[in-house]
Each structure stands twice: as structure tokens, then as C-alpha cells.
Image (tube, rainbow, N blue to C red):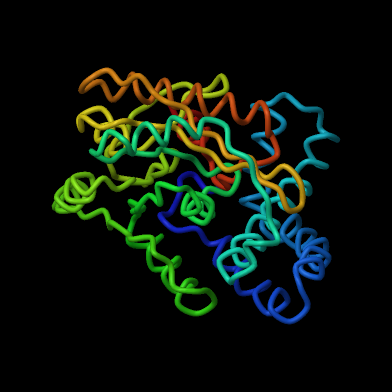
Length: 297
């Protein structure tokens, strides 16, 4: 399996290319039907991803061999559905989907403070569609996404070619830390900064913490930023519950000042909690727990 994340989301971009024509010309149901066959392809020909997700089901969750194999297919299928949903919603089909929100008051309280906030999520569920639901709030929050340049280019290409213009802004992570100034400017404007905390890029700064019983590496940046900036921090997830219904969660975090490790620990506990509820919606297709590196020690 791939030993670390390579800094880009290959599966998502490929999914956009496969399904966008079908959605626009045949509809969402037809895209879901096509997905049954595409999922089989990925099971057999995306071997690194398949090995990594098998490890998650078999070793991390302790499923039987048969159940783990069956859940590989289910996991790929749900992941494909989230891609289809992202394309559909951002292409103007938002009215085809419903949602309900747990913890909405935490977000409203954050906006009332007038100093912005940081939302930390993970590659579970369908966090990339959060903006389309959050923009419907009476408070109409301004959203910025903190992203690597590789992620930004893929998302930007998708937005420009297939969807309506998004009001979401991107803050690109730079080696010279100039993105910190952009973040401070956004927060001073009472904007919400969204970042994922579960993909460590090789040779970048990282922290280690246990999640679901095994130690993994996490990018240090989101947790250093969240613990040093004196603004509210929320853990937020957007989970798919049925074909056209989503469940949004916002959990307030008690942050210890300048204690990134404590924030990370609370984050891993939160991600484990959401995965216990939605075990199929884990979408990190690489050696997340770095088992190859551990074997070498």
C-alpha cells in the first residue's frame, strides 16, 4: 500500500471526470447506477488503495476476512456517491438533497463573537459540500479553505470547468508561512477557516497520536494553529446518511493554549467517534497508520 499521502487526491479528480457527463446528461440516479461497475474496477485495479482500506476494516476495526472484503466494495461505492453528490450539488442541484445539523448553535455562537473560527475536519463523509449547507444559515458565514497547492489546483480545475462560481476562498499553505498573514486577515474579518487534520505529507512537520488503537502521524500545522490563535475551534463532519440526505456535526473544542498535542488527541478521539457511527465513510486510501515504517523499526 502507499506508505504516505502524496499531497493530492487522485481518486476525487478521476471521479469528477467519470461522472460529470453522466450527471449532466442522464441524472443522479444514472450516475449511481454506473457507479456499481466503476466500483468493481477500483476493487481490482486500484490495488494500493484496496490494500489500505482492507487493513482498515480487517486490522483496525477487526472485521472478518469476508466482511472486510465486502466492505471494500461498499466503501468505494459510498466514496463514489460522495463524488457524484459534490458534482451535483455544486452544479446547481442543491435542491435534490436534504440535511440536518447537530451543533449548529456552536457555529452561531462562534460567529457572534466576531473573531472568526477554525473548523477542523477529516477525510470522512463529504466535508467539501459543507459550504453549500453553511451558506444557507441566516448568519451567511464567509468561508476560507486552508489547502495545499496540489489540492487547490485539483479543486480549482473542477470548479472552473463543471460548476457554478463558488464564494469560498482558498488560503494556500506556503513554505515561507505567508499563509499565516492571510489567515489572520480572514479571522479579523470574522471568517471561518476550514482545514482537514488527517493527511500528513512526507518531510513536513508532524505529530503522532493514537487513533483507533494504533499510532499514526498527523500534520502539525492545523493543531499548532488551532492551539495558538485565540479563536473558537470546532470539529465538523458532513456524513452521508441516505442517497440524498446528509447529517452535519459541529463539536466545540476546549483548547488548551499552545498545546497542539492536546488538541490533536481530542481530534483523534473525535474522528474515532464519528467513524464508530459511520465506519464505511473512511476515505484515506494510503498507509495511514504507517505500518511499513513500523515494520522496519
